[in-house]
Length: 198
Image (cartoon, rainbow, N blue to C red; front, side, top):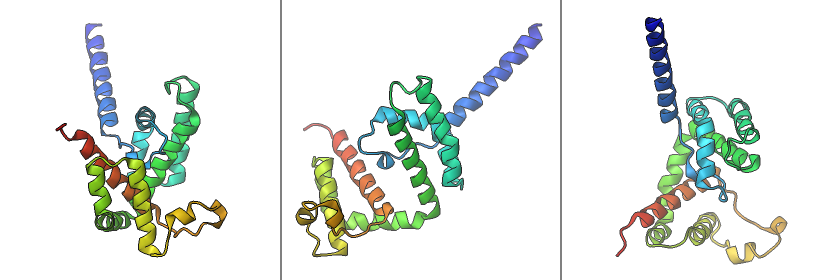
């Protein structure tokens, strides 16, 4: 009897260790992929639910397959009260964005790297301003305007954003550019936050 309990204890300990290791190594949701209205708590909830699926996407799992595996987990967490009162809509959006981004980065890693390298030069002034305290809303608006003007120098954001959306003439931008822009600005905002007070 004593040997059986010891054996069961060892098996349970091993299973818990494997489970904890798997969760610890599961992919994190890149903050730049989350909707702007998502909170850190909501991102972490989804991260805990689908981190292992993101690992699979980063290793080649397709978008549809990943979403089909992840969606029931998010739905179940909301229905069973394990989402800390957060609704399905926002958690689902975080999940879908994270999977879409992971899949796109898996398929086109060079595009993301090229975009980031180009944006570091194009947005150098804005990045420096963020490191010195410029708010992210203003910085994002400035960054997007610079990106649009790099494609169409005549682009006037004041004119374009003041007219009805169906008449706006905004240059088409690859999602990798928007993603890397937000990542760069978010990273530099973190630098500003972590600076010691003078």
